Length: 174
Ligand SMILES: [Zn+2]
Image 1 (tube, rainbow, N blue to C red):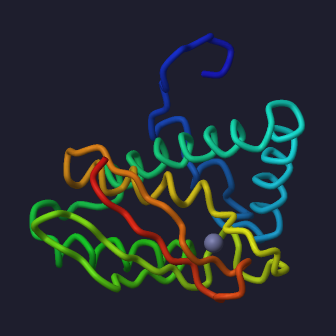
Image 2 (image 1 turned 45 degrees about the vertical axis):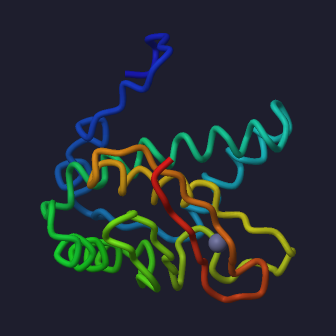
């Protein structure tokens, strides 16, 4: 699983394991602090070893892989945009990822403005005048790629950390 060298992603959903069988007493959930501890220490080490730009690039890329597999495995709706958005919103809320709102959507160009409230990665962090949700940028792009079959980019324009108390992303085909 992780001992084989690779030059392309080999991730698949089965790598997450049998979540029920593995934790009969503790269950599927963990504390948000533990999730952030893992993500932020990994990002810290990547920045220290590879620099800010490369760390961000890797986080976006990992988020994109996650978003593609998330959509492939957990979102059934395809085609109808409203049905897809409704299922995506419900799934992100049910899993405690965030509260997704589509602020604007152009069905012809597939350009979206999306906000995410109570975001898993940044809600409650100190204000730093920087948008920090690189993983979410990739994740959103990956979800939209899987849905549309087209490559996407997503760019965070507002973040809890910039004082906005919600994250806002512009997403469009690449
Ligand atoms: Zn953010």
